[in-house]
Image 1 (tube, helix red, strand yellow):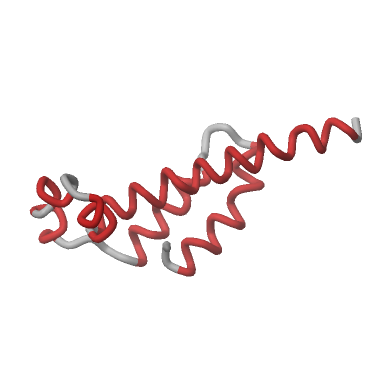
Image 2 (cartoon, helix red, strand yellow):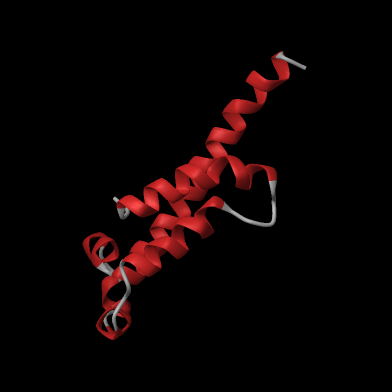
Length: 91
């Protein structure tokens, strides 16, 4: 789970970023997540060992920001591809 502000920003950004290919919804949510849950030096130092396990991947703040970006982009893309056939009905 991302921070509640991250979730809100991704909900608000997804329709707008679908129209503009230069900005991804995941980037917006990643920036908000990085500012709301700032990674510490300890997180960067433990990065080589944390990426070796799934539990460490979810607990490290650096990799969590990357996960938020990836999953937000996947959700936005899925929403866009599901909405295209519905919009084509009306054209």
